[in-house]
Amino acid sequence: MSRNRITEIGEIDSISGNNISVKLFDNIKSNMPIIDGVVYRIGQIGSFVRIPLGYANLFGIVTQIGSAAIPESLREAVAKDYDYLKNNRWINIVLAGEQVGKKFERGVTQYPTTGDNVHLVTINDLDIIYGGYEEANSITVGNISVSETLDAKIDLDKLVSRHCAIVGSTGSGKSNSVSVLLQSIANRNFPSSRILVIDPHGEYNDALSNHSKVIEINSSKDESKLEIPFWALPFNELMRVFPGSLSDQNKEYIREKVVESKVASAKENGLPTRKESITADSPIPFSIKRLWFELIDFEKQTFTDIARTVLSDLTVNGNADDLISNEYTPAGLGNAAPYLNNKAKGLLGFLDSMRNKLNDSSYSFLFSPGKLTPDLNGKIEEDLDKMFFKWLGDKSPITILDLSGIPSEIMSSISGTLLKIIYDGLFWGANTKVGGKNQPLMIVLEEAHSYLKAGEHSISSRTVQMIAKEGRKYGVGLLLVTQRPSELDETVLSQCGTMVALRMNNSKDRSHIRAAVQDELQSMVDLLPSLRTGEALISGEAVKIPSRVKFFKISNAPKSSDPKPSEKWLDEIDAPEEEYKSLVKSWRNKNYKT
Ligand SMILES: Nc1ncnc2c1ncn2[C@@H]1O[C@H](COP(=O)(O)OP(=O)(O)O)[C@@H](O)[C@H]1O
Ligand SMILES: [Mg+2]
Image (cartoon, rainbow, N blue to C red; front, side, top):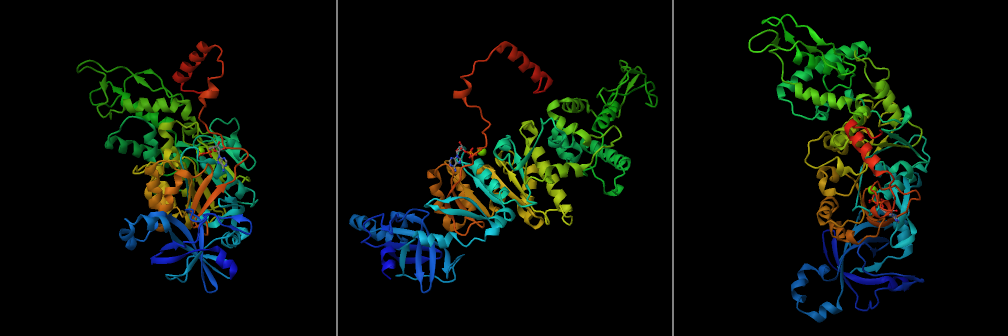
């Protein structure tokens, strides 16, 4: 009993819902009592208190201190009484869970009443709160901030299947936290864990090198080259790759041509697909060069007769493979032969921009995807199964898709398509052994704000919303990483069962976090600007109790891709004139590598 007296700090004054107002005892003179040689601090936001109730203990989290914590009913009365304010201290707490026997459980089965004593929580109590994770199902990612000896554990199943968001300003330690998480999963040596990292800046290549395979655009090896066949893009996304607007009519015209090509090439490749079920969105190969060639040919045709039945002579014999169009004898002036094709669609401008992209080497991951490239008849050497196997079937637990070489104007389209391809594959393949149900997949979306803008009906936003809503049924979990939560769709953020909030300076972003966390914890969001680097407030399903955690620091830090002026300006650059020459050459050829 004497032990209890040492830890007593106050008593409950009022209770409203889950929110409890506690008046600290007057005789708590020191803010920092010492118990068993350990110094404790009373009334730190985010720290815990214990309320003994018979054989059980309730545990609460301190959410407010000082005058803000004075109960509403008293506030007016004491507002002018300076002495009272000075001599009385209050804290607000939120009940988080309950200890029965040696076990800590979330949520409470019984409520305290006014007058019940409130105690500070000792290291022994913390052991109870943070212990009790099932080893098989938990990973350790750092320490609990209040006590370096306590491991911060996370429930792996809940983390993956209920989605998780990691948010924080630049430099707050997001990428480090992701690496720590992934590394601790990898260290468990599961024979078939699957994690796919969508890495827009190529930051993770080194950080996780022991456990991962990197797939990137500029790889010289086939097995690690990022190739996304254009024909797997839904029709609208494919059209979006080509700048310039298309009238609805022309879009439909091209759509029909694409369907025709896909039907023909499904036959050519012997795909067991019913003709009726093929649409312009079906992931079926077709030759885009031939499509271009036929479209432009129709535009350029001239005829010798006014009825437009006999084509005039060719002046240039084009070929589809090299994207050279046929040229016909130019049309006569006025009403003289040859005659222009009066059914032409006015697509020449669009087709020009299409050819530009087809020739652009920064788009070759899309239009010349190795063995996935269809020949002029739409025949392919390898099919999508090889691509899935490359992305998802590797022995290493983590696969990094390094998207750093993808032109920024199509980043959102491509990353969205990529997610859609993967999700569709796992969804339709749910009953296969490699479907998401049998081998769940965690998808990490680094810098998610850069391709998932809120309110945009882009394919990436739509796909992520779909995965957020129904992914767990099909074994697909998201780990969303962003520095701008305010730019993300709120429904996506609110679908994340676990929130890891690192330091966050921007108040607009904080208000989005506030909206996404549990009501009673909202005041804790005010703490975010003061967190140290690598320190986070973790709340939600994957932790037993909302906790302030310091993540481990990974030895191989993810490299930030931004150049450091103070370092870079130290370098001497020889022959800068030549360098500018190659700069212009690269620009003209749209090729980084010349
Ligand atoms: N837990 C940590 N402990 C110590 N330093 C850290 C920790 N997490 C990150 N850092 C350091 O902070 C810097 C920024 O981390 P980073 O993970 O790249 O942040 P972000 O991805 O949020 O921009 C890096 O130099 C990193 O080494
Ligand atoms: Mg980062």
